[in-house]
Image (cartoon, rainbow, N blue to C red):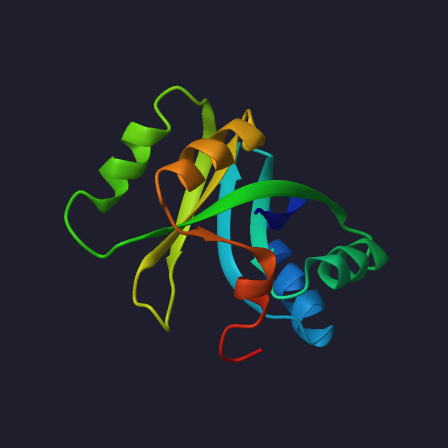
Length: 144
């Protein structure tokens, strides 16, 4: 019960994000979520796409350095303390990073986690009744 994230290593200079967006758009792909972290010279763009395999292929074909990573997608109820409840459940799992987007059909937040131990995190969340989001759900949302 995971999602496939595409990561792109980019030089920190004007036009690089536009290039990635254009490559994905020309390939007919939709970006469901994005996050970027950077240093002075380079950045890592993390993407959830409606078709990660095709996105990875298109980015590599365009000469960009891209890779695929497994992340967790958790639907967080739109209420105070919703995210805190998930953090409480995962307090014994190392969270490497996270980012989020709002799911249009449910109006809840989808929070994406890269964790050290995916199987352990999935087990904890499933046992606790937390709604996990899989690749098919993200790929088939309206607009696909």
